[in-house]
Image (cartoon, rainbow, N blue to C red; front, side):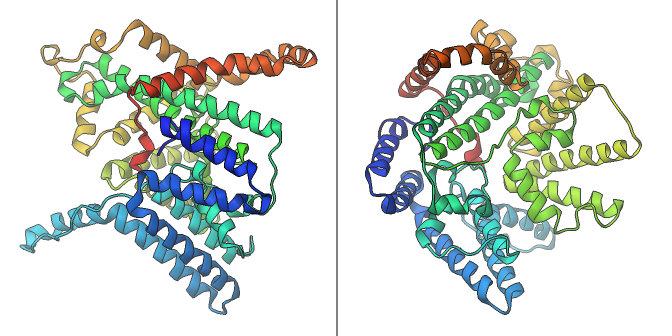
Amino acid sequence: MVFSNIVFLGLFLPITFFAYYLAPRQLRNAILALASIIFYAWGEPRFVILMLVSVAFNFYSARLIDSSKSRNTVIAAAVAVNLLILAFFKYGNFIADNLDLLLEPAGISPIALRPVPLPIGISFYTFHAISYLIDIYRRNAKPNKSIIEYSLYIMLFPQLIAGPIIRYKDIHTQLSRRAASTEDITAGCVRFTIGLAKKVLIANQLGMAADAGFDAPANHLGALVAWSCLVCYTLQIYFDFSGYSDMAIGLGRMFGFQFPENFNYPYSARSMQDFWRRWHMSLSTWFRDYAYIPLGGNRKGEGRTLLNLWIVFLLTGFWHGASWNFVVWGAIHGFFLMLERFGRRMNVRIPRAVGTLYAILVVMLAWVFFRCDSFGQAQQYLLALAGHWPREQWAVTFRSIYSTQTLVLVVGAMILALGAYPKIEKALQPAWRRLADLALDGWARAALIAPALVLSCMSIAMGQYNPFIYFRF
C-alpha cells in the first residue's frame, strides 16, 4: 500500500485516524503498531514475518548490548545479522550473477539461486534497526523496555517503506509521550496534501514524459529529446521522493510525531557538497554518523579522508540497489566531492550561478546511471545526450512527447524545485497575518489546498500513471 492509493486515502487512513483518537491514550501505540502491520501486509504479506522477526531480534539484542560484558562482540554480531539479511534479499542474485561471471572461465558450474524477491522497505527498516543498536552501544540512548514502543519506531507506517530514516535518540521520548493539537493535525493534513500533489500532479505527469525517452532505444533519440527527458526525470525523482517525504512528515504530525526534514531544495545547491546537505538528508547524515565518522572521517590525513569519501559514496550507491549502475552513480558523486575538496584547499571560488549550474549538470548526468537498467543502456543514453545518433534513426520526436500542458508543467516544476516556494511564502506573510487577524487564514489555506487534494484524488481514482520510484530500493 502506498499513500497515493485510493484504499489508503479512503479507507485505511480514516479508520486508523479515528480508531487512534477514539481509543484510550494507553492503547494508542498498540493501535498504530497494529495499523502499521496491516499497512505493510497489504502490499507484502509474504514478508510480514521477516519484519516482525527483525523487530524481535533487534529489541532483545539492544537489551543484551546494554547489559553484556562482551558488548563489542554482541554489537558486531547483531549488526552482522541485520546486514546479512539485507544482503541476502537485496544483493543475493547480484552476488551470484557476478560470481558466475568470475567462475565461468574456470569451467565451474553457475550458482543455482532462484530469483530472490525484494521485501519493500527492507533497506529503510534495516537502517533504522542498525542505528538503534549503535546508539545503544554508544550510550546515546537507553534500550526501550516496551516492545510495542520499539515496534512503533521500526514499523510506524508513515516512514516504514521510504523513510525518512529517523534516529531513535531523536524520537524516543515521542514514542511514550506525545500530543497532537488541533493545529498539529491541521498542519499535518496540509503537509500531507502538498506531498500528495507533488507526487500525483507533478511527478507522475513528468514521469510519463521521462519514460518515453528512457524506455525507447537510445539510438532513436536526438539530443534535444534526450536532454528534455532527462530534465523530466530529474524533476520527477525529486517531486516523487520529496513528495513522499512530505506525506510521511504530515502523517507523523497528525499522530503527534515530529519527523526530521528530508529535502531542502537540493537543485538550488551551489556544489555537490551542498547538494548532499539538501538531498535525502536523513540518509546522508546516517552514512556520515555510522560510516564516515567510524572510518576516521577527516581526522586521519587528506589521503584517508578522500578514501573515506569514496567508500561512503560507493556504499550509498550500493544501498540504492543491486546494480553496478548504482555503484557508478555513487562513484560520480564521490569523485566530484573529492574535486571540490581539492578546490577548497586551493581557495578556488566560483560565482553562485556557475556553482548551481555545475552542480545540477553533474547531478543530471549521474541520474542517467540511476535511471537506466544497465551500464550499456546508460552509455547509449549518454551518447544520445551528446547528439551521437544520426537524424534518420530518430523515432521519438519532441512533439510526440510534449504537449503545451507538459511544457508548462516542466517550467513550473523547475521554478518550484529551485526554491521559489519559500520566497513566495515569505512575500505573502503580511497578507497571511492580516487574514489571521480576521480569523480567515484557515479558510484561505483550505481554499488553496482543497483543489490540490480533489485533483489528486481524481487522478488516483481514474487509475492514471502512478509509479513509486523508491519501491526499487
